[in-house]
Image (cartoon, rainbow, N blue to C red; front, side, top):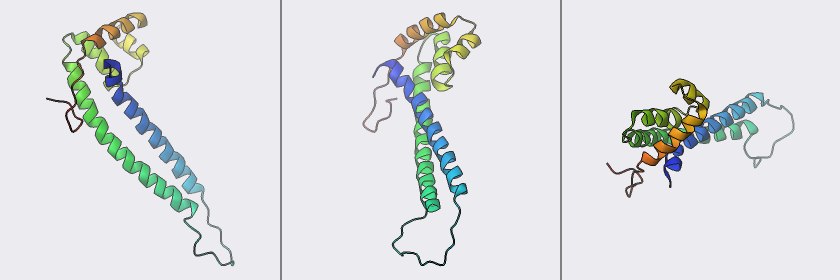
Length: 144
């Protein structure tokens, strides 16, 4: 894994959490649109779950996944922050934190740092060369 892939892990996980939240919103919309159908006709006892129950079960499952992902994200951001802080140049630290911890766009970073976009990309390349990827331990976390 190179430095960019290492640093991008948090950004990618954050995006997956956002996607799961959007899925929950969609399922909530679907669940609230479900209407009961009343009939005098007998129902099969083997009929399975209703659409509402299925939506609720999927929502619960996604919420559990999001909780796990959030815990991973917090730990990952701590590790990445530590790696960024080990870079000697404060300007590189600022750029890397804005991009990989705060998930800012290149354009916003360029405006905030008062540089041209091309120069930001050049700084980014230099900053990536200074990142030291921590070696994972047996439990998958960085060595301290």
